[in-house]
Image (cartoon, rainbow, N blue to C red; front, side):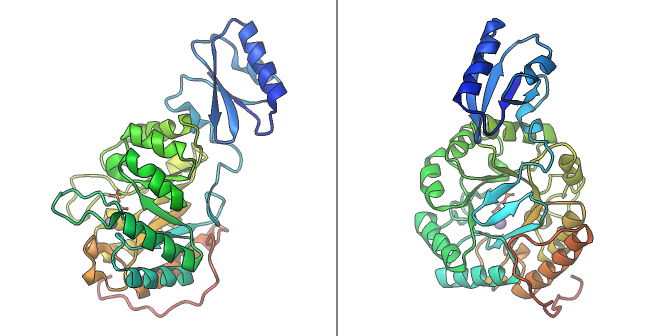
Length: 352
Ligand code: PEP
Ligand code: MN
């Protein structure tokens, strides 16, 4: 079992719990779980209620569960994740927006300014791109990372960027507010552990072929490495359907929200693969209770070297933010980190 201590449990309480467990002849392993101390007790045949009564103990989680640490996040109010000034899972809808990939700095700044003014809570941008084909653009690397940090700084938005290799962790974690682990790396366990140890919030996308248990076990790796700041992101699954790029699993949003306390967001851009489907999918995600969205936006989508067909033009993003605000209000939520804005004119293309 895992014995989680209260956040404010001091050294004396820690020592007392450890001693009580050892007195029962148990092997005790201590670990940090976010800000809290946890004790791992393997193979113990103890009634969890008796351990739960020890002073300083918040919760006892049986190891029999598939992902006990993830299950332990289900507490009243959940476990919101703060990324810079943005809060995910705190009862508001937080929108991450920006280009698929960081290209020209002036264009990036234009996108960053626009999404900030439209009410986004955080900026996104890829610099170490993970591409299916080695012949496709692989991202601007270190200099693009500097441009992204500068654009984020200028707008006051925190930013997320993806990493794909444990050797990138130190460099990215030094400047990024949130580390994105992409779908293709969901089970890259050395990367998950190294990224977790950097102590920054992690945005963990679901692999396009992963079932929920596999996804939650990937989250479990991050929690076990001592980082409880995980945002889960549904981005669509491989399926028999060919009219959308990936089939968005909307049902997983309420399913997870009823079982775990970590924030769950949705990426309508990569699942749709078509900018005309992004708005409807994003609205469905918010209506299903998602804590946020991550959306690709570009000032001139036709010019970008990566995912041009799914990038939302400015007017459509502004319109979507207006819709998201209205939908969130239906269940008493607001936009996290957003400035109030007036509804922009609708300029959707025919059929959108
Ligand atoms: C991305 O967000 O840029 C990305 C590559 O997404 P995914 O890992 O979901 O394919
Ligand atoms: Mn993309």
